[in-house]
Image: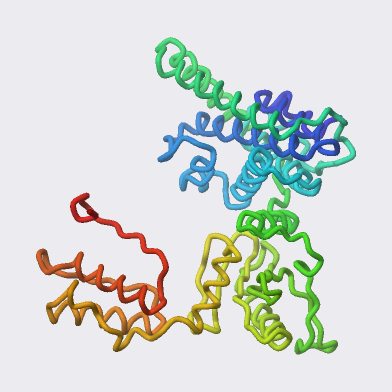
Length: 414
C-alpha cells in the first residue's frame, strides 16, 4: 500500500505525482523532491480555485504560498511545510550537487502531512483519510532515477503545459465557463462533506522534525552546506550547569576557522525567545575558546531572531540566515565602522545649514544604535541632495556598502 493511496479518492489530480515522489525515495532523492514539489504546486493552485482566492502579485508557487490571505487559510505550520517542499524541489531542479536522501525523506514526510491535512479538511471524502497513519518509508518502491538534466526538462515541460492550459482558459469563454462550473460544483460537495464529518483532526503538524528540516533548508539557501561534523552539536565548555558542558545546535564557521554565528533551535511549540539566554551562553563559551564573539541566531524553525550583542544592537526578527560574506562583514564592521558624530558632510552636495542639521540628527540616531530614521522636509528644501550627502557620509564612515534609493520620478533617480 502506498502512503498516498487515500488520494485516489480524495485528491486524484495530485495522486500520481505523490506516488512518483514516493517511488523515487530510496532510488533517486532528486526525482522524489521534484515530484513532491510538483504535487504541492498542483494542490496550491487547486486550493486557490476551490477557495476563489485572487491571484497574488505574481503568478508563481512562491507568491501563492506566501500570499497573506492564503497563509491565513492554511495556517503557519502547513504554510511552512509547503515552503520547505518548494525549496527542496527547487534545489532538485537547479542544484548541481547531489540531493541527500534525508532531504527527500523530509520532502516526502511533509508532503504526506500536507496531503492528509488537505484531504481531510478540503475534499468531499474526509472519511477516506487515514488520520492516524504516519508516513512509512518502507512503503516506498524502487524506480529508475532521473538525471538532473531530465528533471530540468520535465520541469520546463510541466511549466509549458500549465501556461498553455491557463491561456486556453483565458481565450475560450466556453472552457472558462466549464471550469468555473466544475469548481462551483466541487465547492458545494466539499462544503456538504465537511459539514457532515464526525472525525477530528488531532495530528501534530508542528513536530520537531519539520523545524529541523526547515532550519537546515534555510541554512542551505544561505550557502551553509552543514557537511562537517562540527557544524552541528558542537561541544563547548564553561556552561553554568553541573557538568560545565553543552552542545551548540549549529555553529556557522568563517573561512579563517573561527565561529561567525551560533544558531539555537527550540521546539516549534515554544517561543524562540526561550532560546535567547541559552544562545548567549553558547556565544560566551565560543568567545572564550576562539577569542571572537559570534553573532547570535535563535529560532523555533518558523520565527528567526538575530542578535549582534557585541555591536550593541538589540535583537530583531529576520526572515532567514545570513551568508558567510554577510556575517563576516557584520563582524568586521564592529571595528571598522567609525562614529558618525562629527564626521564631515560634503558641502559640495549640501550647503544649507538646515540640511547639515538634518544629517546630524540622523547621525545621532544611528550612533545611538537606532536602526531607523525618518526625515520630513518641505517641497524644494533639497531632500534628495540631503539624502545623497547622508549616503556619502555613511559609506565613508564604513556603515553601508550598498544603498537602495527609491524615488517617485525617473528624473530624480537620474
